[in-house]
Length: 139
Image 1 (cartoon, rainbow, N blue to C red):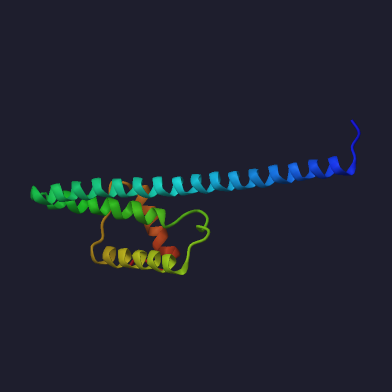
Image 2 (cartoon, one colour):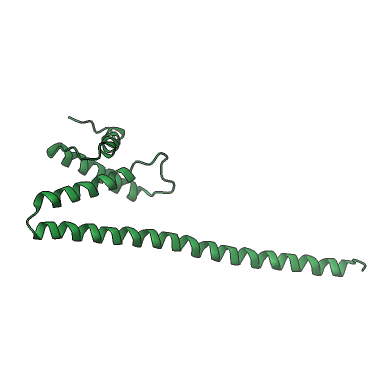
């Protein structure tokens, strides 16, 4: 088979069309996957939050105030640890950064008023280090 300019143009257009279709299908599939990961993560977190809050409510309804307080303290510690990644989270907007910083400051102020040591010394250390990174020193 001899390749002439007409055949070459047809091959080129077929490759170009195949590339375009591949790009569109790949982009769509990648976007769907990304949305799925975000949705799953968000729903998983919300489901865990509901379970935590119901546990706290149960303790309060039973008059087990100390157990409820400890459940909330654990919840706060776990959230604070996530605010301190090894590397900064990429792509956070200023509103999110401000909310995270406000949450850290609020937790620090609370812990100054009501200091505690949990049964998880490693987590306690991580929380203290987070406060230090944000120039909030233990008093």
